[in-house]
Length: 80
Image (cartoon, rainbow, N blue to C red; front, side):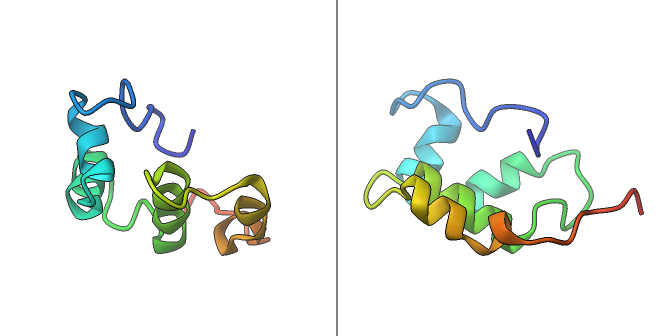
């Protein structure tokens, strides 16, 4: 929802974007996800949460997601 598109088509080794997350290349993944967006569109907290939600090993469970800094942040973004 934040990106306005899904992070990948399918969670398989053949999916280019999924390979970056599964292959431990989040830098390349976020570079691709950020194309066409303003610099800093995705906060570091958001990227950390998504990477942990999509991790192949030690994936976050619901308790960890709900406790994450990005999820608990009370500051809502403005149009500015």
